[in-house]
Image 1 (cartoon, rainbow, N blue to C red):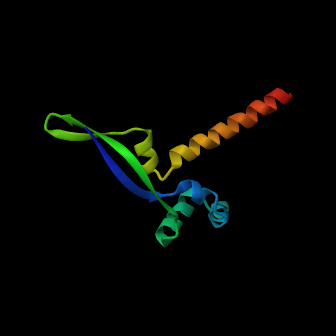
Image 2 (image 1 turned 60 degrees about the horizontal axis):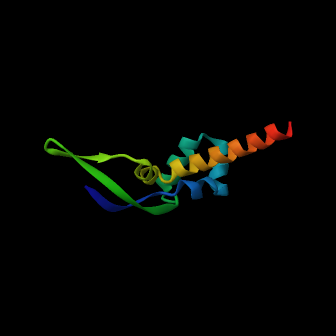
Image 3 (image 1 turned 135 degrees about the vertical axis):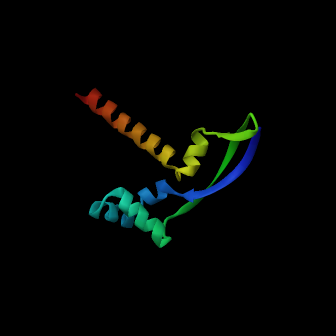
Amino acid sequence: YYVQAEITSLDFPTLAGDESFLTRTAQSDVLTALQEVIAEGSAPEKTYEVQIQLIRENENWKVRMDNSLSDALLGGYVTFYQEMTDEFMEVLANENENN
C-alpha cells in the first residue's frame, strides 16, 4: 500500500551553499552551526513530495524506508552527500589521469 505525502524539512543543499552558514561552520562545528540556524528559525526549508510504502505486519502498519523518504526526512542531505561524493570522485579520476 502506498501513500503520497509532502514533507517540509530543512533544505540542506541550499544551507550548505550559504556564506553566513559556512562562516559559522568555520567558527564552530557543523552540528552546532546547524542547531543555531534551526533554533533561530532562519534555516531554509523545502517541501519534498514522496511516495511512502506502508507494509502491514500482523495488526500493525510499518513504513518502508527508501532513499527518497530518508532524503526528505534529512532535508536533502542524502542527495547532497551523493553529489559531493560524485564530484570528488570525478576530480580524483581527473587527477589520476593527469599523473
